[in-house]
Amino acid sequence: MEKEFNFKIIKNDCTNIAELIDLAKTYYHEGDIINKEYLKWQYLKNPSGKPFLFVSYEINKNEIAGQYLVIPIIYVVMGKPISGTLSLNTLTKPKFQGKGLFTKMAKITYENCVSNNALFTVGFPNPQSYPGFVRKLGFKHLGDIPLLIKPLKYGRIIFSYFKKSKKKHGGSIKIQNINTKNIKLLNFNDNKIKNKYNKFWNSISKQYKISTWKDFTFLKWRYNDLPTRKYKIFYYEEEKKIKGIIVIKAEKVWGFNVGLIMDILISGNDLSVGKQLLKYTKKVLRQSNLDFIAMLHSGNNEYNILKKSGYFKVSQKILPQKIHFIVKLNKEFPSSEMLFNLQNWKLTFGDYDVF
Image (cartoon, rainbow, N blue to C red; front, side, top):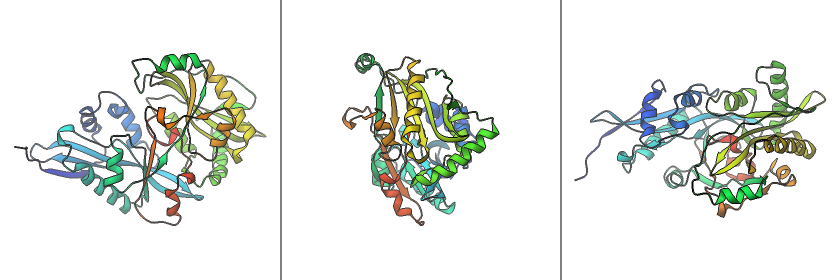
Protein backbone atom coordinates (compact mmCIF):
# COMPACT_ATOMS: atom_id res chain seq x y z
CA MET A 1 0.00 0.00 0.00
CA GLU A 2 1.40 3.39 -1.02
CA LYS A 3 2.31 5.65 1.88
CA GLU A 4 0.11 8.75 2.19
CA PHE A 5 1.86 12.11 2.30
CA ASN A 6 0.49 15.53 3.16
CA PHE A 7 2.28 18.67 2.03
CA LYS A 8 2.37 22.38 2.70
CA ILE A 9 4.02 24.98 0.48
CA ILE A 10 5.50 28.15 1.93
CA LYS A 11 7.59 31.04 0.67
CA ASN A 12 11.28 30.84 1.58
CA ASP A 13 13.28 33.99 2.36
CA CYS A 14 16.68 32.27 1.84
CA THR A 15 17.73 32.75 5.47
CA ASN A 16 18.44 29.02 5.83
CA ILE A 17 20.56 28.14 2.81
CA ALA A 18 21.91 25.06 4.63
CA GLU A 19 18.44 23.49 4.48
CA LEU A 20 18.26 24.13 0.74
CA ILE A 21 21.68 22.54 0.29
CA ASP A 22 20.58 19.46 2.23
CA LEU A 23 17.60 19.20 -0.11
CA ALA A 24 19.83 19.52 -3.19
CA LYS A 25 22.21 16.84 -1.88
CA THR A 26 19.41 14.26 -2.14
CA TYR A 27 19.63 14.74 -5.91
CA TYR A 28 23.10 16.19 -6.64
CA HIS A 29 26.45 14.91 -5.37
CA GLU A 30 28.49 17.85 -6.67
CA GLY A 31 28.18 21.22 -8.35
CA ASP A 32 27.36 24.81 -7.49
CA ILE A 33 23.84 24.00 -6.34
CA ILE A 34 25.29 22.47 -3.13
CA ASN A 35 27.87 25.23 -2.61
CA LYS A 36 26.87 27.71 0.11
CA GLU A 37 28.91 30.63 -1.23
CA TYR A 38 27.52 30.15 -4.72
CA LEU A 39 23.92 30.12 -3.49
CA LYS A 40 24.54 33.21 -1.34
CA TRP A 41 25.80 34.93 -4.50
CA GLN A 42 22.88 33.74 -6.61
CA TYR A 43 20.07 34.25 -4.08
CA LEU A 44 21.21 37.08 -1.81
CA LYS A 45 23.57 39.25 -3.88
CA ASN A 46 21.65 39.45 -7.14
CA PRO A 47 21.28 43.21 -7.85
CA SER A 48 17.79 42.57 -9.26
CA GLY A 49 16.56 41.12 -5.96
CA LYS A 50 15.92 37.89 -4.07
CA PRO A 51 14.41 34.80 -5.70
CA PHE A 52 10.74 34.01 -5.91
CA LEU A 53 11.30 30.80 -3.99
CA PHE A 54 8.72 28.37 -2.64
CA VAL A 55 9.50 25.23 -0.66
CA SER A 56 7.26 22.25 0.08
CA TYR A 57 7.28 20.27 3.33
CA GLU A 58 5.81 16.88 4.17
CA ILE A 59 3.56 17.81 7.08
CA ASN A 60 3.66 14.58 9.12
CA LYS A 61 7.44 14.73 9.63
CA ASN A 62 7.96 18.40 8.73
CA GLU A 63 10.46 17.20 6.14
CA ILE A 64 11.53 19.44 3.25
CA ALA A 65 10.32 17.84 0.02
CA GLY A 66 11.10 20.18 -2.85
CA GLN A 67 11.74 23.69 -4.11
CA TYR A 68 10.70 25.79 -7.06
CA LEU A 69 12.26 29.14 -7.81
CA VAL A 70 13.00 31.81 -10.35
CA ILE A 71 15.48 34.64 -9.88
CA PRO A 72 14.69 38.21 -10.99
CA ILE A 73 16.57 39.52 -14.03
CA ILE A 74 16.17 42.86 -15.79
CA TYR A 75 15.80 42.58 -19.56
CA VAL A 76 15.66 45.18 -22.29
CA VAL A 77 12.60 44.71 -24.54
CA MET A 78 12.38 47.06 -27.50
CA GLY A 79 14.57 49.63 -25.76
CA LYS A 80 12.84 49.53 -22.36
CA PRO A 81 14.03 47.81 -19.16
CA ILE A 82 11.50 45.13 -18.14
CA SER A 83 11.42 42.93 -15.01
CA GLY A 84 11.59 39.25 -15.87
CA THR A 85 12.83 36.07 -14.23
CA LEU A 86 15.10 33.10 -14.96
CA SER A 87 14.02 29.60 -13.91
CA LEU A 88 16.67 27.43 -12.23
CA ASN A 89 17.47 24.99 -9.40
CA THR A 90 14.03 23.35 -9.40
CA LEU A 91 14.00 19.95 -7.68
CA THR A 92 11.97 17.48 -5.66
CA LYS A 93 13.33 14.79 -3.37
CA PRO A 94 13.22 11.45 -5.19
CA LYS A 95 10.86 9.83 -2.67
CA PHE A 96 8.35 12.65 -3.11
CA GLN A 97 8.40 12.76 -6.90
CA GLY A 98 5.18 11.98 -8.76
CA LYS A 99 3.03 13.72 -6.11
CA GLY A 100 2.29 16.84 -8.14
CA LEU A 101 4.62 19.08 -6.12
CA PHE A 102 6.41 20.43 -9.19
CA THR A 103 3.19 21.86 -10.64
CA LYS A 104 1.79 23.09 -7.32
CA MET A 105 4.99 24.91 -6.31
CA ALA A 106 5.30 26.42 -9.80
CA LYS A 107 1.72 27.75 -9.75
CA ILE A 108 2.29 29.59 -6.47
CA THR A 109 5.67 30.88 -7.69
CA TYR A 110 4.17 32.43 -10.83
CA GLU A 111 1.28 33.94 -8.89
CA ASN A 112 3.95 35.60 -6.73
CA CYS A 113 5.74 36.79 -9.88
CA VAL A 114 2.55 38.44 -11.14
CA SER A 115 1.92 40.21 -7.82
CA ASN A 116 5.49 41.53 -7.93
CA ASN A 117 5.26 42.61 -11.59
CA ALA A 118 7.82 40.07 -12.85
CA LEU A 119 6.27 39.93 -16.30
CA PHE A 120 7.78 36.80 -17.85
CA THR A 121 10.05 33.84 -17.14
CA VAL A 122 12.68 32.21 -19.33
CA GLY A 123 14.46 28.91 -18.95
CA PHE A 124 17.07 26.58 -20.44
CA PRO A 125 15.75 23.21 -19.20
CA ASN A 126 17.67 19.95 -19.36
CA PRO A 127 16.08 17.01 -21.20
CA GLN A 128 14.62 15.57 -17.99
CA SER A 129 12.78 18.72 -16.89
CA TYR A 130 11.85 20.04 -20.35
CA PRO A 131 8.56 18.06 -20.75
CA GLY A 132 7.22 19.25 -17.39
CA PHE A 133 7.86 22.92 -18.15
CA VAL A 134 6.22 22.77 -21.57
CA ARG A 135 3.32 20.39 -20.88
CA LYS A 136 2.39 21.38 -17.34
CA LEU A 137 3.50 24.98 -16.77
CA GLY A 138 2.57 26.72 -20.00
CA PHE A 139 6.08 27.46 -21.27
CA LYS A 140 6.59 27.73 -25.02
CA HIS A 141 9.65 26.20 -26.65
CA LEU A 142 11.06 28.83 -28.99
CA GLY A 143 13.83 26.62 -30.34
CA ASP A 144 17.34 25.44 -29.56
CA ILE A 145 20.25 27.89 -29.29
CA PRO A 146 23.06 27.30 -31.84
CA LEU A 147 26.52 26.30 -30.59
CA LEU A 148 29.40 27.69 -32.62
CA ILE A 149 32.97 26.43 -32.39
CA LYS A 150 36.41 27.26 -33.74
CA PRO A 151 38.86 24.32 -33.62
CA LEU A 152 42.38 24.92 -32.32
CA LYS A 153 43.73 21.34 -32.32
CA TYR A 154 41.93 18.87 -34.56
CA GLY A 155 43.92 15.85 -33.34
CA ARG A 156 43.09 16.50 -29.70
CA ILE A 157 39.40 16.98 -30.57
CA ILE A 158 39.25 13.51 -32.13
CA PHE A 159 41.15 11.96 -29.20
CA SER A 160 38.94 13.65 -26.59
CA TYR A 161 35.77 12.67 -28.44
CA PHE A 162 36.57 8.98 -27.96
CA LYS A 163 37.65 9.22 -24.33
CA LYS A 164 35.54 7.05 -22.05
CA SER A 165 35.45 9.40 -19.06
CA LYS A 166 33.54 12.57 -19.97
CA LYS A 167 32.37 14.72 -17.08
CA LYS A 168 30.20 17.67 -18.05
CA HIS A 169 32.30 19.99 -15.90
CA GLY A 170 35.87 18.88 -15.25
CA GLY A 171 37.48 21.96 -13.71
CA SER A 172 38.69 25.39 -14.75
CA ILE A 173 41.77 26.16 -16.86
CA LYS A 174 43.89 29.25 -16.24
CA ILE A 175 43.97 32.04 -18.83
CA GLN A 176 46.87 34.48 -19.26
CA ASN A 177 46.48 38.07 -20.48
CA ILE A 178 48.24 39.56 -23.50
CA ASN A 179 48.87 43.30 -23.62
CA THR A 180 47.77 45.19 -26.74
CA LYS A 181 47.15 48.82 -27.65
CA ASN A 182 43.37 48.72 -28.14
CA ILE A 183 42.29 45.66 -26.13
CA LYS A 184 42.54 45.68 -22.34
CA LEU A 185 41.33 43.73 -19.33
CA LEU A 186 38.27 45.31 -17.75
CA ASN A 187 38.92 46.52 -14.18
CA PHE A 188 35.81 46.47 -12.00
CA ASN A 189 37.44 48.77 -9.43
CA ASP A 190 38.00 51.61 -11.91
CA ASN A 191 35.18 54.19 -11.86
CA LYS A 192 36.32 55.67 -15.17
CA ILE A 193 35.93 52.28 -16.81
CA LYS A 194 32.54 51.88 -15.13
CA ASN A 195 31.32 55.17 -16.64
CA LYS A 196 32.75 54.33 -20.06
CA TYR A 197 31.16 50.90 -20.02
CA ASN A 198 27.73 52.19 -18.97
CA LYS A 199 27.81 54.73 -21.81
CA PHE A 200 28.68 51.87 -24.15
CA TRP A 201 25.86 49.67 -22.81
CA ASN A 202 23.24 52.44 -22.85
CA SER A 203 24.06 52.99 -26.51
CA ILE A 204 24.35 49.36 -27.59
CA SER A 205 21.25 48.15 -25.71
CA LYS A 206 19.11 49.83 -28.36
CA GLN A 207 20.43 47.50 -31.08
CA TYR A 208 18.92 44.41 -29.44
CA LYS A 209 15.20 43.72 -29.59
CA ILE A 210 15.40 41.60 -26.42
CA SER A 211 18.43 41.05 -24.20
CA THR A 212 19.46 40.74 -20.59
CA TRP A 213 20.12 44.26 -19.25
CA LYS A 214 23.94 44.10 -19.18
CA ASP A 215 24.96 47.27 -17.41
CA PHE A 216 28.10 47.47 -15.25
CA THR A 217 26.25 46.36 -12.12
CA PHE A 218 24.98 43.20 -13.81
CA LEU A 219 28.37 42.50 -15.39
CA LYS A 220 30.12 42.79 -12.03
CA TRP A 221 27.65 40.49 -10.29
CA ARG A 222 27.55 37.89 -13.07
CA TYR A 223 31.27 37.65 -13.86
CA ASN A 224 33.34 39.29 -11.13
CA ASP A 225 31.53 38.46 -7.89
CA LEU A 226 30.64 34.83 -8.65
CA PRO A 227 32.78 32.91 -6.12
CA THR A 228 33.15 29.53 -7.81
CA ARG A 229 34.11 30.51 -11.37
CA LYS A 230 36.74 32.71 -13.00
CA TYR A 231 36.10 34.89 -16.04
CA LYS A 232 38.06 37.51 -17.93
CA ILE A 233 36.44 40.46 -19.68
CA PHE A 234 38.33 42.34 -22.36
CA TYR A 235 37.20 45.56 -23.99
CA TYR A 236 38.15 47.20 -27.27
CA GLU A 237 38.72 50.95 -26.96
CA GLU A 238 39.06 53.50 -29.73
CA GLU A 239 39.11 57.30 -29.37
CA LYS A 240 38.59 56.84 -25.61
CA LYS A 241 35.29 55.01 -26.18
CA ILE A 242 34.50 51.34 -25.62
CA LYS A 243 33.45 49.79 -28.93
CA GLY A 244 33.08 46.18 -27.85
CA ILE A 245 33.62 43.63 -25.08
CA ILE A 246 34.17 39.90 -24.89
CA VAL A 247 33.80 37.65 -21.81
CA ILE A 248 35.75 34.39 -21.72
CA LYS A 249 36.69 31.46 -19.50
CA ALA A 250 38.34 28.09 -20.02
CA GLU A 251 37.46 24.72 -18.53
CA LYS A 252 37.21 21.00 -19.15
CA VAL A 253 33.81 20.21 -20.69
CA TRP A 254 32.62 16.72 -21.76
CA GLY A 255 36.25 15.53 -21.96
CA PHE A 256 37.50 18.52 -23.98
CA ASN A 257 39.68 21.47 -23.00
CA VAL A 258 37.48 24.34 -24.11
CA GLY A 259 37.66 28.10 -24.30
CA LEU A 260 34.17 29.49 -23.70
CA ILE A 261 33.04 32.84 -25.01
CA MET A 262 30.38 33.76 -22.50
CA ASP A 263 29.30 36.91 -24.31
CA ILE A 264 30.33 39.35 -27.00
CA LEU A 265 28.88 42.84 -27.45
CA ILE A 266 29.91 44.91 -30.44
CA SER A 267 28.73 48.48 -31.02
CA GLY A 268 26.83 48.67 -34.29
CA ASN A 269 27.84 45.06 -35.06
CA ASP A 270 31.10 46.52 -36.38
CA LEU A 271 32.80 43.61 -38.17
CA SER A 272 36.28 45.08 -37.79
CA VAL A 273 35.98 45.47 -34.00
CA GLY A 274 34.42 42.03 -33.66
CA LYS A 275 37.14 40.33 -35.68
CA GLN A 276 39.88 42.05 -33.67
CA LEU A 277 38.34 40.92 -30.36
CA LEU A 278 37.89 37.37 -31.64
CA LYS A 279 41.44 37.26 -33.03
CA TYR A 280 42.74 38.46 -29.65
CA THR A 281 40.63 35.84 -27.86
CA LYS A 282 42.05 33.07 -30.05
CA LYS A 283 45.59 34.25 -29.31
CA VAL A 284 44.93 34.34 -25.55
CA LEU A 285 43.24 30.94 -25.44
CA ARG A 286 45.87 29.21 -27.57
CA GLN A 287 48.28 29.71 -24.66
CA SER A 288 46.10 27.45 -22.49
CA ASN A 289 46.52 24.37 -24.73
CA LEU A 290 42.83 24.14 -25.61
CA ASP A 291 41.06 21.91 -28.14
CA PHE A 292 38.61 24.49 -29.44
CA ILE A 293 36.71 27.69 -28.66
CA ALA A 294 32.92 27.51 -28.25
CA MET A 295 30.16 30.07 -28.07
CA LEU A 296 26.44 29.73 -27.61
CA HIS A 297 24.69 32.47 -29.57
CA SER A 298 21.21 32.97 -31.01
CA GLY A 299 21.22 33.35 -34.77
CA ASN A 300 21.29 37.13 -34.90
CA ASN A 301 23.35 40.23 -34.04
CA GLU A 302 26.98 39.21 -33.27
CA TYR A 303 26.26 35.70 -34.58
CA ASN A 304 27.11 36.94 -38.07
CA ILE A 305 30.47 38.32 -36.88
CA LEU A 306 31.31 34.91 -35.41
CA LYS A 307 30.43 33.17 -38.69
CA LYS A 308 32.59 35.60 -40.68
CA SER A 309 35.45 34.99 -38.23
CA GLY A 310 35.64 31.26 -38.91
CA TYR A 311 33.22 29.88 -36.30
CA PHE A 312 30.86 27.19 -37.55
CA LYS A 313 27.59 25.86 -36.21
CA VAL A 314 27.68 22.40 -34.64
CA SER A 315 24.96 20.01 -35.77
CA GLN A 316 22.32 19.46 -33.10
CA LYS A 317 22.60 15.72 -33.80
CA ILE A 318 26.12 15.42 -32.31
CA LEU A 319 25.67 17.72 -29.29
CA PRO A 320 25.83 15.94 -25.90
CA GLN A 321 22.85 18.07 -24.86
CA LYS A 322 20.63 20.45 -26.83
CA ILE A 323 20.13 23.94 -25.40
CA HIS A 324 16.36 24.37 -25.32
CA PHE A 325 15.03 27.89 -24.78
CA ILE A 326 11.57 28.31 -23.26
CA VAL A 327 9.47 31.34 -22.33
CA LYS A 328 6.38 31.84 -20.17
CA LEU A 329 4.36 35.06 -20.10
CA ASN A 330 3.22 35.86 -16.56
CA LYS A 331 1.46 39.15 -17.33
CA GLU A 332 0.69 41.02 -20.55
CA PHE A 333 2.66 44.19 -21.29
CA PRO A 334 3.34 46.33 -24.39
CA SER A 335 5.54 44.37 -26.83
CA SER A 336 5.00 41.10 -24.92
CA GLU A 337 4.23 39.34 -28.22
CA MET A 338 7.89 39.94 -29.14
CA LEU A 339 8.94 37.40 -26.52
CA PHE A 340 7.82 34.40 -28.55
CA ASN A 341 10.06 34.81 -31.58
CA LEU A 342 13.56 33.40 -31.00
CA GLN A 343 15.00 35.77 -33.62
CA ASN A 344 14.20 38.71 -31.33
CA TRP A 345 16.46 37.41 -28.54
CA LYS A 346 20.17 38.03 -27.96
CA LEU A 347 21.15 34.84 -26.07
CA THR A 348 24.56 33.54 -25.01
CA PHE A 349 26.22 31.28 -22.41
CA GLY A 350 26.09 34.25 -20.04
CA ASP A 351 22.31 34.32 -19.98
CA TYR A 352 21.87 31.21 -17.88
CA ASP A 353 23.57 29.56 -14.95
CA VAL A 354 25.33 26.44 -16.29
CA PHE A 355 28.66 28.09 -17.26
